[in-house]
Image 1 (tube, rainbow, N blue to C red):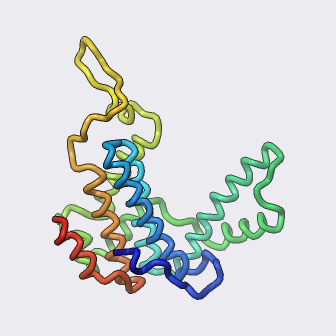
Image 2: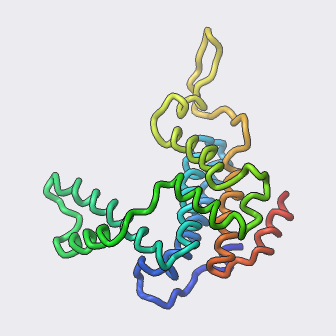
Image 3: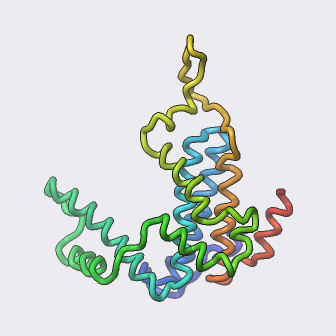
Amino acid sequence: MVDRYLPVAAGEDNRHDSWQVTGPALIARGRNTLESLTAVAAVRHRADASILLRSLFEHFVSFAWLAADPANRMPNWLASDATQRLKIDADFRTIGEPVFDEKVRREMEARRSAAAAMPALPERAVRVDEEWGTRLRELNAISPHVSARGIYRAVYREGSSFTHPTIYGIEPVVDGSQQTVFVRAGERPPEHPGALVLGPLTYALELFVSAEALGWPMKEEIHSVFKRHP
């Protein structure tokens, strides 16, 4: 469905301070992540699928947060990006291999200083609920308790546990009784709906915001997908 709208001709230079470039690009990234998630989930790699779902959710929240007020929030996006780029440059400079020359570094520093960084992801999720909850019935259509902040608890926290080396993160490949423990290549099936279910739902929420903010895809098209695949 999304492929019918891509590629998008923004009609501008490749400047990421432009919402006309950044908005569609975030939707395209989400499309690719969902495709990867589907492939990983198909081979029953629950942990890796959860890591991809975590990324997909972060892109949804960031897109929706920016889409609510792109004119005023794009500087925050740029400041966050510059902060991360400067951290990379600073790390490489410790071995005498700067990523940026001095001119580009000054440009990055100016971007970082021009605005505050984006709020932390949980705060962005709260703002998405506040700013889109009344405009999009789909955001809380599943349950009155489902929200961007609520999905954060379920999706992002578990995805973080699989992203980093943790006891929780290795449990899917550890099995056995008290007497014998097996470490297997394959993973035990999850005890709750997996990323293959939550991934399309998360991306659909991003697309519903896109329908309002970018004018595509049409909401009816998104609903029709779920009618065909209930």
